[in-house]
Length: 173
Ligand SMILES: [Ca+2]
Image (cartoon, rainbow, N blue to C red; front, side, top):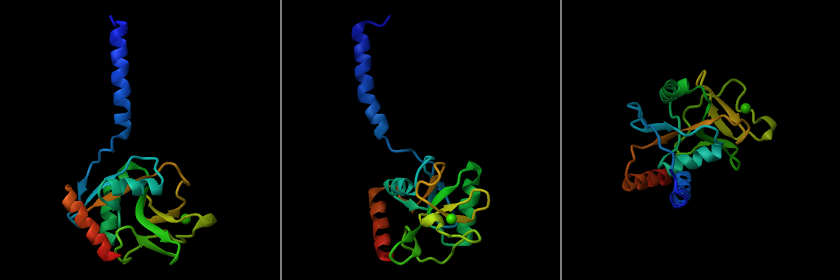
């Protein structure tokens, strides 16, 4: 039987535990790609591009940057089974009016659907990969709720490795 004292103790534990749970970072399932030597992981679902980008950075990476048809195929084949379109790290730079990769790497490959990016309504600035075909569309940040992001990370597990990613990014910029 729960005494009043014990119930209060339980409440106190819950009050302490719930904020900790809310603050916990998502845990990711990383998949290594022999093709690029990098690790990839999906974010939780129902995120805007901006939210997915923040999660990627928190995880020590960036939203997936696709440098070749082979990398596109690998990401597509790895995550198509999740049946949710996903954000990649490709967005419109409003100054240059050109799409740029989050990693700063040069744009050597694109896989837009025919007629895309069309910036429909003047508010589509972010690239999504279609889980059915692996090709891309530009969408608004919160245009559709059911989106996830794919994070890419350069084999980083330590803060040292994370900071070396920082220099790579600086190098590219
Ligand atoms: Ca579009």
